[in-house]
Image (cartoon, rainbow, N blue to C red; front, side, top):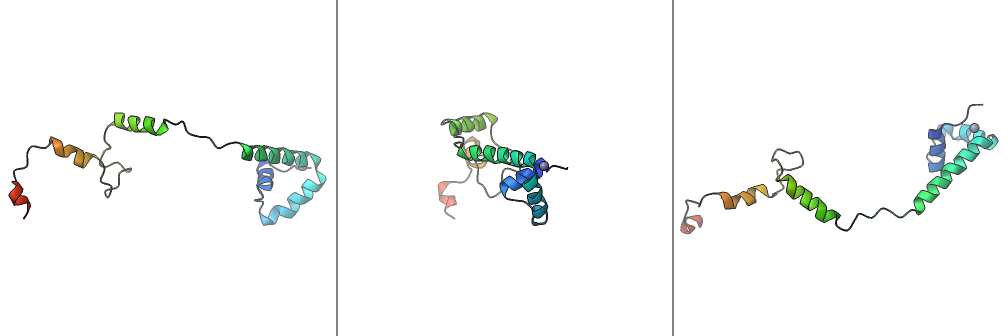
Length: 110
Ligand SMILES: [Zn+2]
């Protein structure tokens, strides 16, 4: 007797069995205590996993990520992470380092 594969049993436990194989699988499960047992175990594991609390990130995660990003320095302008439409730091942060603008306040109003 060929038993059901782990993938098939997982699909049964998830209720995601393909319609074509449903009858064959159900027929096997009806007669095979070993696969029934496997399925019960899988369903038990799944229901226990559902009861677990979702993991909560540590409270200082955001602070640690920000300091990590600061330690890495500004992003390369050609980085795929940086869209050209995102006005991130480097442009405005550099303004203070430029020499004084040659234009006078009066000329800027033009
Ligand atoms: Zn079996």
